[in-house]
Amino acid sequence: MLELTRKLDRSPNGAHAQDMTNNLDTNGRNATREPREMSAGDRKISRRYLIEFGAGMIAYVICLIETLTWGHLDGESSARFAWALLPVVPALWIVVAVMRHMRRVDAYQRQMLFQGLSLGFALAMVASVTMGFLAIAGLLIPDMAWIIFGVGMLGWLVGSQIAKIR
Image 1 (cartoon, rainbow, N blue to C red):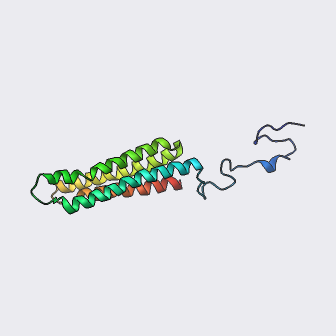
Image 2: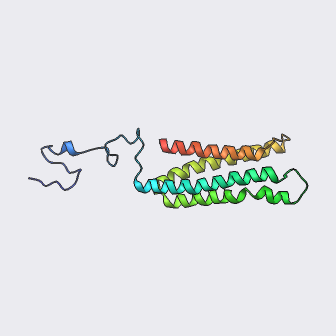
Image 3: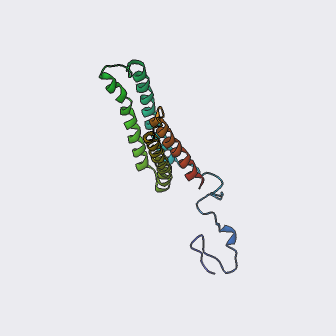
């Protein structure tokens, strides 16, 4: 009798066929329809990222509230520039949290993250160029920088979801 040493080996009489699968590494589920289950390591990585990112976001919101409350950004004091830059400090921590997360995840998750980030970046650049040319033509849009920021962040979110679906 022929000894079967691997899962994909076939016996001449077909008796081994019931053990074979075409859904390798999916625990018998259709990988395109159901999301994969997170391993304990993946959950630990996600939890650490959420803690770091969440701490940065909380600090950002606190600094933003302080800046808008006490910064007198529309005043005459030169200190208003320091107040205006205060929320940038926790925003930099958020960048560090994303970079640390990218180093922790596996290649597949990193690829999905890059796809989302790249779409967000590309859309932010297109929005920036569009707004820039409109400004050159004389159309001044209030809070133009926030629109560009919003387009980039929305692009990141949508791009990440598209990458997960594919």
